[in-house]
Length: 181
Image (cartoon, rainbow, N blue to C red):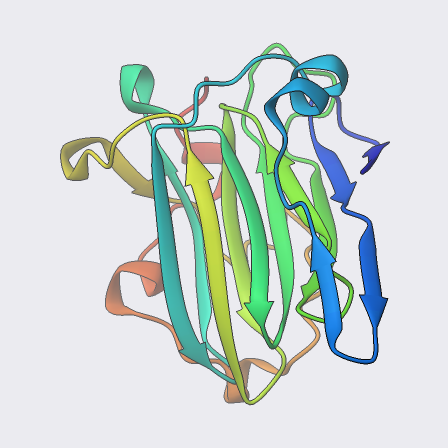
């Protein structure tokens, strides 16, 4: 596995090695010892999965306070553009974001520490999205950062007219009013 630092402290792109032949490939998608060595120790306690169609934009979600979550995300079918936004008030990169294309083909993963909003848009016909988290889902602490807040400067690859958002995701708050870690 290759661990690649991003321009935002604590966010990592992880590229597992694939060993292939005519039958397909084998890949280790997570190894605690290597994760601990490069990223640091995180106790992942739950695995989640979503399935979405082209144009679905999920996010930018986070959980506040004691319910915040670190995430290790990957795509096992299809392709997405994954985005995380730094909401750590003491961070020099507060309000900045990292964008990474995750796909079944490239096998990349993204580690997002606590203190970030997270979302993705589906670029393929369908996408199966998987993630490990280090804290349980707590609906009372869930919040949404507005996906298209101009202050964020996120350049989503699909036009707004092609995006499918939940009612919750259409009602996110802007960066100036967002909860800060």
